[in-house]
Length: 308
Image 1 (cartoon, helix red, strand yellow):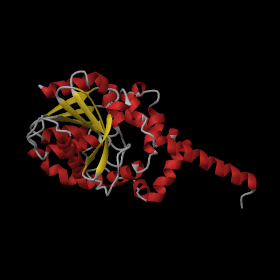
Image 2: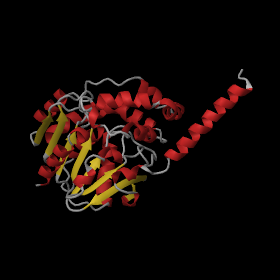
Image 3: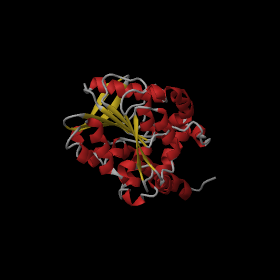
Image 4: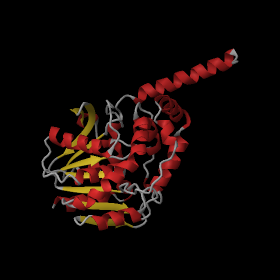
């Protein structure tokens, strides 16, 4: 049994965590991308999607990974928006978007992206996705939509040999999701940092100073951990179903990858490139998974090439 002092300490800590979580719900992250005024919530397919739009000209739709948010594109949006109409959004169940009756697969995420394109009346946009978002790009590309200029898949997850960590089965349980969010707010920065060091390796110097702190806040928002776990668990079957369709891609497809990627091995995208006749493979030496941070100018150059 706890004595009075121990009970008070536990209660105080719980109150502190709850306060921090309440603060997390406030949409403050858009400051990174030049102001809250450019953020809106758009209704598509029974979801309220947080969308950030800036710039003008050719439309470029940015799709983040797993877990992720609009802010994952902070390194390229300011410069990219000088020439392009840039649209980034929180995928359903991530960031500050809703999570109503989600389907945790690539096809559903492709449906959301196409619905946003229609809702925002984007004409012939360039689609750019990173990591799991890069896999969503592939799920969109196999449909060969007439209203797409080009696809750019950055550090995509494509391997059908990958094994899912059994931890994700546990994280799918709502109660575990809530408990882990509490834990992350209390002492999870070191855990997030270790994971991000792997993702950024060998480009840790390119990680923004406040990156870990902000990602802890975002990941600990409601639904984010559970959504990521469900998507991770479904990914292998998604990729197995998608793989036979790659050769059908007719639209221009740019595959951008770091040769030192420890999350998605470079051999996987080389095989993808060989499978898709319409693709162009761009490899960056001494670059890991977070290409948009390690090679922002080079990635923008690829987007500019896709717009021609």
